Image (cartoon, rainbow, N blue to C red):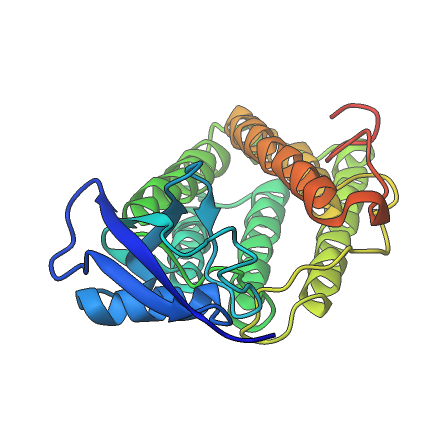
Length: 299
């Protein structure tokens, strides 16, 4: 196919970007990644701070090396809008920092408040610490993120969820001498809860391994996942995460654990619904539609 030059009208959206050009010319064979790179270079802004949308319908143009600008719906004379997303922080760093809170808080309050600790308090601290240690290790060595960064503000919002709800709130109400977990263990509740926790953590890890296999290192391609749990729900990682937290609730005997689990499940359900919509849109008839996105027969 013969390459020709396409010229786009460039407009700022929101806060103006200094040095943003009024128009931009690219080859018709250029990709949306080339579009982002040239605009970032021209405006002197990090490529991760830019969000580009089409002037015709306002739809988002992703930063993909596999997407030609013509396939993105841009033609000669098209208008594009460029928004500065503000300060960014890497997804990986956000995950590391937000999980670090519970990972530090639980052992600390366990030592300070549990005098002497009961069996259930020791077990609670062990399970919760292992849960967030697993998350840290997955973040560092397993997860492959489709986007490099997120807005810096998200760090504070996400950290409050984990440091306060999963960290301070659960730890305070679990390790106090008057906490229900300070009493005797009921083996008919404790050990089934530990079993649920173990199944949930291992199932969650398996799902993350499957999702990792669908994306190359540094890539942002997507695929249709198959394997344990994917025949039941859209996001089995969230299903197994829910099982793990039911297990933790059964060990801690704490309403604080129930509160965190309820908030987490509600948020994961929203994410799972969005992923189901995205799978249907991206893969069409190749994708087997799911009635349940996270909990079979429930949600």
